[in-house]
Amino acid sequence: MKREWWQEEVVYQIYPKSFYDSNHDGVGDLRGITEKLDYLEYLGITMVWICPMYQSPMDDNGYDISDYKKIAPEFGTMEDFDELVAKAKERGIKIMLDLVINHTSDEHPWFQKALEDPDGPFHDYYIFQKGAKEPNNWRSVFGGSVWEKVPGRDEYYFHSFGKKQPDLNWENPKLREQLYEMVNWWLDKGIAGFRVDAITFVKKDLTWRDREADGADGLSKCTRACRNQPGIGAFLRELKERTFDLHSCVTVAEAPGVPYGELGDFMGEKGYFSMIFDFRYADLDIASGSEWFKRRPWTIKELGEKIMASQTELQKWGWGANFIENHDQPRAATKYLREGQNNPEAVKTLAAMYFFLRGLPFIYQGQELGMTNFQRNSIEEFDDLSSVDQYYRSIEEGYSPKEALEFVNLRSRDNARVPFPWNGERYGGFSTEKPWLGMAREYPPVNAKDQAGREGSILEFYREMIRFRQKGEHRDCFVWGSIEPVESSPHVIAYKRCTEEENIWCWFNFSGLEAEERVPMGNMEPVWQSHGEARVCGDFLYLKPYQSVMLKEV
Ligand code: GLC
Ligand code: CA
Picture 1: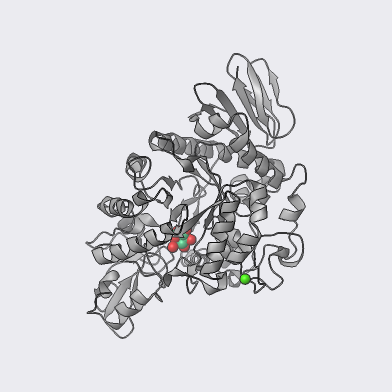
Picture 2: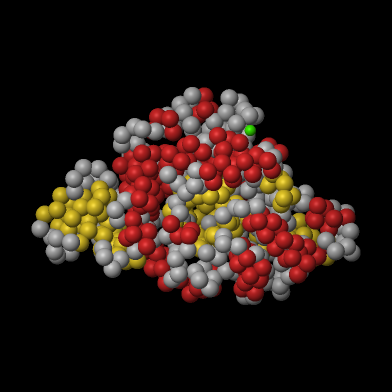
C-alpha cells in the first residue's frame, strides 16, 4: 500500500457542546477548543475531529443541520472557526469535520421549501410519499415509523433517524451537486478531511416493501432496507471523485453494515473512503446497536477474537480507524472492564490493547482520563433522543421501568456527552454556569487537572503511549508493522506487530489475577510494560493483574 500522510496521525474527538465553555453560558464552544489547544498539544495528539458545529436546532446535537455553511451561534462564528484552524495548525494539529449528508434538519431551507411547494424543485431533494397512512412498517433508528406526516396533506416524508432529520434523496442528481459543492467549499478552507456520518444509509430499497415485524411495536428495523443497499457504490464513488479526490484529504466513514467481503470497495487505495469504523466489537454487549434492551453476555476471549478478526480483515485493504469510545457509545471503562472500571491499571490495559493495534488511534474526549458511565435515577435527566426512545421501547417490550432505566444508564449516549471535567471544582471547571447537560458528578473527582503531571495517572499513561507510538524507538513497527493474532489464555488479549526488522509481541491481561502465557522460544527483550517488571521464566511470561507487556524477538 502506498504510504499516506494521514496514516501516522493520532486523532482526538471533540464534542463541542461539552468540551469547554469559553463565554460561560453553559454550552461548550469553538473558542473553548482554541483555549484548550495547550491541553491537546500536551497530550500529543496530531488531529482533532470535531462533531458537527454547523447551524442546527440541536434536536440531535448538531447532527440535524439547518445551514451547512454557517456555524451554530452557540458555538461561535466563522471567524472563531477560522481562528481555531489557524491556531491549531501553528501547533501541528489538523482539523477534521463531521460531514452529515444523509439527512438535514427539517428546519433547513431546502426542506422548508419542499414543504411549501410540493411541485417545486426542492420537493425532490427529500423522500416523500402520498397516502393516508405510513407507506410501510420500517422503524427509524431513533424509534417510531420512518415516516412522518406532512401537516395538512396526505403525504409523508422519510427519516432514517429522528423525525427532525429528514433523509435527503440521493437519487436526485441536483441534490448531489449541491452537496458536492458544499463539501469542496469546506475542503478549500483548509480542513484535513471528514468523518462521514451515517453514510451507508444514503441508498434505500426503492420498492419500499414491508418487512417482517421484529418488535412489540409491529415495526421492522429500517437498517434492513435502507443501509448498505445494492447500488450504493455508484453514489459513493461519485462523491469521492467529485470531492475527496480533488484534495489531499482524509476521510473516515461511519459505515456500519458493510460485510467484511466488501471492505475493499469502502476503504483503502480504491475504496470510497480512506478508512471506515468497524462497529462489530463496539456493540458486543447488545444484540443490535439500536436495541439496548437486547443485552448479551460476552467474554474477553470473544472481544479479543472480534478485534483480531476485524484487524485481519482491515489489513487486507488498508488502514484501521481504531476506537473504544465515541459520542454514541457508553464509556469504554464501564463497557469493557465491568468490575475493573475503577482500577486505573485495568483502564490502562484496555487503552494500550486498542492503542497499539494497526491503524489510527481515535481518542474520545474524557477517555484519556478513564471516565466511567454515570448512574441517572430518572429518564427526565437524559437529553439524548435515542435514550428516551430506548427507555419507552424497553417498557413496550415488557421490561419494568427500573430495568428500562438500567439499560439506558448502561448504553446512553449521554454517558460520553457530559461536560469535560477540567478540574475538581463545581461543574468541573467546564463552565461557571449550569451546563446544558448534567455532569456525572458536580465536583468531579476524575479530572484533567488532577491527572496532569501526576505519576501513574491515566492521562500521563495516554501521553506516554502517544509519545511511544509517534516518537519512540519502535515507531516504525507500531505505525507501519503488520498485525497477527497470538494465542493466549482466556483473560488475555495478545497480538504481534511485525516489520522486516522487528517482531513485537504484545499481551494485555484483562483479569485481576496473574496470567501465564507461553512465549516463543528464543530470546525476548522487554520493549514496554505498563506497571512493574514482567516476569519471564523459561518459556513462560507471568503477567501481573491488569498488566500489559510487550516483548521483542532478538
Ligand atoms: C451518526 C452519529 C449520531 C447521530 C446519527 C444521525 O450515527 O454518530 O450521533 O445521531 O448519525 O445523524
Ligand atoms: Ca459557550
